[in-house]
Image (cartoon, rainbow, N blue to C red; front, side, top):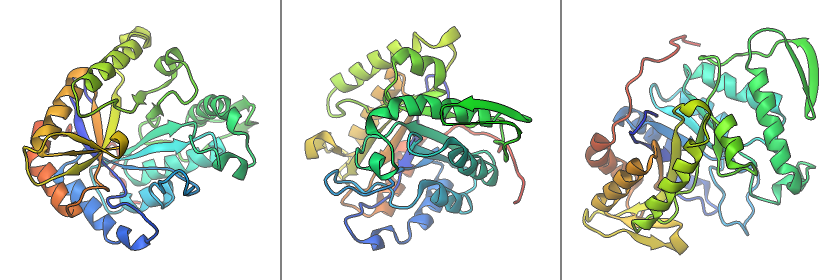
Amino acid sequence: MFAPDKLTVGIFLPLRHYAGDMSVLAGQADLVSQIDRQGFAAVWVRDVPLFDPSFGDAGQVFDPFTYLAYLAARTKHVALATGSAVVSLRHPIDLTKAATTIDQLSGGRLVMGVASGDRPIEFPAYGLEHGDRAGRFAQALSYMRQLMQAGPLAIDSPLGHFKGAEFLPKPVAGAIPMMVTGSSGQSLAWIAEHADGWLTYPNATHTATGPQHLAEKIRAWRDLIPGGAFRPHMTNEWIDLVDDPDHPRTPLHGGYVLRTGRKGLMTLLEAWQAAGVNHAALGIQFSQRPASEVLEELAADVLPHFPSHGAVPASTVAW
């Protein structure tokens, strides 16, 4: 997914918008297998425990980790990413157990976008205070990183404590990349120190000013990274890719969706790459054309300009 000064392309799920009918998700796994064969860098799933109609978006619908385990068996190369797991709602042991299990089953392909949560209705449902989410987020991330360390552990956290037990399974590569989403209630300096990467909204996508503002934000973050080490930035957009390649970039639904032809999309991706973005996750659930048709165009005409990075799988164990 990631290399300095390069941008790759992933696909956000679901491929069709849920509006009360689960049938729109039928056949989606077959298309994810197609995405894998076509060379996209990643597929992304969202974490929405409860559908709040007033929020207007049911997200992925399926539990993200259960579904990623299913997709791991249907794919071979594509990275499996959460965008994003709401770590403030769940206990770090259960969350890490699910994550490292999928990482092992997929041969080390899990990338975790993590977030503090933005849907107030969910927190009292878990018996938690919405206002405590930023603190719980930082505590949970620290707990999860400690769990993935080798050998018997001694953990003392506000979220729990134990001594002398070992956590299994371990991640394939020793750790799972943890990509902080937005601010998650933390300072930019905290994100620079503690995040393996940063996932943010892109600002406006129909004008040049959006990528310019995004570039400023990315530079400010990277200036704070200890030692100047490379850490990737990711962004996303929901697109309605029309069949006219010259159709101008046009914001819809208050800027939530971008209607565009592929030339306009490529111009946007080029601007993001110049801004320092390393991965673009595209959602096509609001596209008017069939999902398979949109994926074919993206694979044939866009991916060659933003190819995924080749890599040898970290694990070839056939579980």
